[in-house]
Length: 440
Image (tube, rainbow, N blue to C red; front, top):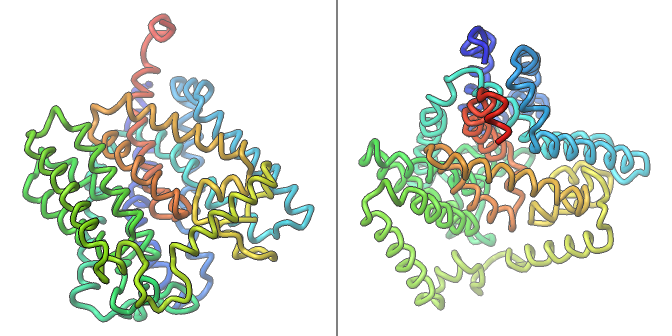
């Protein structure tokens, strides 16, 4: 890489923009809801991050055009090619759906944004980290400091503040509900902290709790306290998919850290998981266990069990994909479909949502990008960030089986942005090698 581009002013400026977005993402829902309640224009405030990303694109193009190594990587990368194909399928099916009145313009634009933005941010962060060392050096602070605020505020919500405290920030029926319950049972108030809801909070913790655990070798006491506080908050989110996702991520992380941690850490984790699972099974007839873990209690105030609602939604989505394997177009399913002129279609499964929108071909391309990124992280697993992302990807992938986690601004942009940071050093190092060595 040319010396004048490495940590140059444009590269540092791009890195600072990316760092600002990553740091503010965990507070996106709280800030935009508060601003909307005071000034209106909800969509304008919600796209602050997309606007910053778009404004940073001239810097990205300049850095790529000026650097031969980055140009070659973009030209040869299978990930870039698949992302480009994924975008083309969205645009083609989107225009077709718009022309045939399957979707309106509002739903289409919204769907294109939430389905494609995190891939674009991945590439922006990759260029930023490839041309400046800021993000690579500072990622623990960028992730853990905001997470500590999210966790502290969430614990305060549960132990100190009133259930509807967030109404002071504009939360309500027309924005985001100030609190949620388990199957309409007021005994179990679900904490959401600064995130969009309890489930998004749980999915976010699938990433940040392993990030805290990964730093055990450096600050043992601080990291243990961080992980314990995150675990308590995770429990009170009452997000069962996030519980399982975090457990899966922790197991993968400790397996990746096997050579670097005392064996008693791993043995203790395994014992805790077995003890916890055994306790839940042994107490499965207890009312509280039924309420919290299985959602099967007869005391539920909800007209329909969340299990039944989710199962029905997944069944309907599978039926849609079976009868329309090419998809109906972006905006015809998932969160964007609430803006459509037709009935909303919520699959309760992100992968099925993608298949409903852009068909099995689009889903195959999406999964290919995920798998190629996972492969790259596996090759880079000596790095702490790569370990965290690889472990959390396992957990988040599970969460997406029963929710639309990748549709959430905070989680999708944060994880994929960090993935770009983790992948950048190895890519630029490989591109620096002489051509005859790369061809071997």
